[in-house]
Length: 301
Image (cartoon, rainbow, N blue to C red; front, side, top):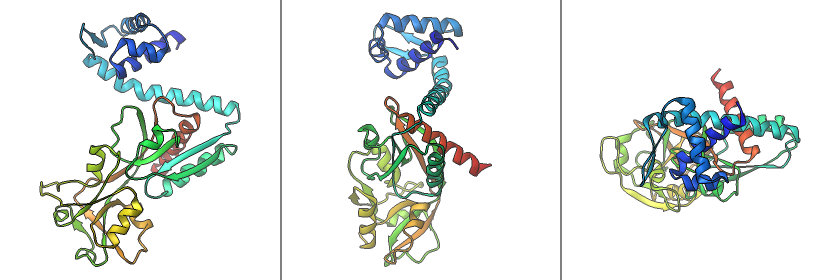
């Protein structure tokens, strides 16, 4: 692929995010007319328009939407490969800062070990991320990447790999009527006050962790709001509410005599995924994403 072709693809990706030729040019450090020229060249290679342009708006054609969905992961993989090669050429030192929610499970521990074996000169720092601010540390560059609960619908973040699909578990006080059960149904959540999450987490994300209704449409009472997992567990132990957790987090805290962890049937599985910033992802974060992907591939083989 020539440098011109690569620049055409890059221009299309940026324009698809901005939907504005002027802003796309600013991000690419070229003129607005140069963005138009690159796009026309790419459309000429493909043989059909990718972008609809009017005096009022810029939008993708159906072909453009399809092309974007296929191009973005391939582009990210290519950029990660180049970053890894550059890092390997210079010894790949520095620090990799990994944020996580809940606990460091086996998948994450294995990925960290693989990264350390591959890049022994790169130090690793691991920090827990507050439930109330799942994406902020990545945006503020406090961590290079973070393992967070899904869903993730943030345009400025790259999601992947996705791992640790696990059944959801209800944490309740040992004194709660459901504490002795082997499992509960999702509809029984209507009888629990679910502890929610405050802070800057998006509404869609907070609702996914503490839904306001059961799959059958029954309202779920709202419990107190917390910033951190430990706050939530403390309130659970005091019987102030119940909390939905992924299985690995429940197992990690399972020795608490004041809390019972009961599997929930009928809810979608909990998912974790690695996120990094689309614009300022570090080579270390890109390499760690590959290590996570390889770890998951080994487990699936």
